[in-house]
Length: 283
Image 1 (cartoon, rainbow, N blue to C red):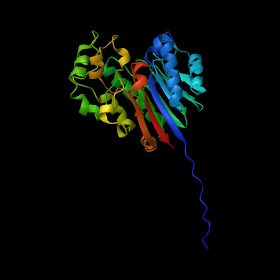
Image 2: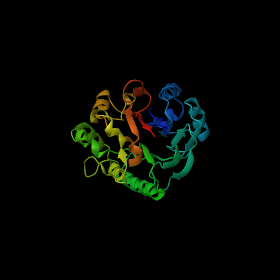
Image 3: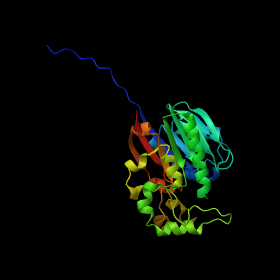
Image 4: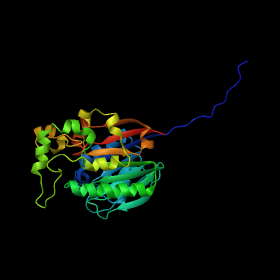
C-alpha cells in the first residue's frame, strides 16, 4: 500500500507593474480624446501597480477618479504643480516620502504589495544634475534598508546595456549635441552618451529586468510618432529611437520577474510621446 503524502499547498501572487510617461498630462487635461483612448488601453492591460510621470494638471482626487476606471482604488501623487509623478495600485499604498529637495521634478517613495516603489522623473536637460539626483535617490534606497524595491519611471538617461546600439546612432548623438542649453546644460558627457546615471542605480545593486526579456533593437521607449510635426519629423522619430524609461528592481525581486514588455507599436504610438513598460512578477 502506498502511503498518502500530504504537501502544504504553495500559493503565488502574480503582479503586473507598469510605468508610463503620459506627456504633459494629456495637454493638462485638454486632450480628452487621447486621454480616453489611454484609459481604455490601461484598462485592457490591467496592471496591478501603475507608475505615472507628467501628471500635469492632476490632483490626487482627479487621479483617483481616473484610476477607478482601470480598477485601482489607491493613489498617491507627488505634488500638484509642474510635472508630478504618481502611483496607483489595486492594493493599499503607504506613502514613505515625497522627494522634492534638490530634485528637478522629484521622486515618490511608496509601499504597496510589500515592495518599496521609487517613482522617478529625472532631469530632461542635464547629465550632471541627473547624476546628482541618482546619487540622492540611491542613498534614500540604501537608508530604507529594504531588500524589496523597484525603481521605475522616466530616467532621461541611457543604459550601458544599450551601448551596443547607441554607439552607432550618429543622428541621436547629433540631436543631443544640438540641444546644448544656453545655461550650459548638456545631456552628453564630454560629447558622448552618458551611462553614469543608470550605472549608479545598477550599483545599488539594481537589476535591469527589461534587458533579460527584450532584444536590444526593440528596447526603445522614446520618441513616438505622436511627436511627428510637433518636435520631430517622421525620419527623426525613426532614427532617434532610444530607451530612457526603466523598471529596475532589487536582486531578490528580479528573481520573480517572469516577463517584461515594451509596448512600442500599435495603439501606444499615439497615446503619448513615450512608450510604456510592463514587468510581470510571480511572488
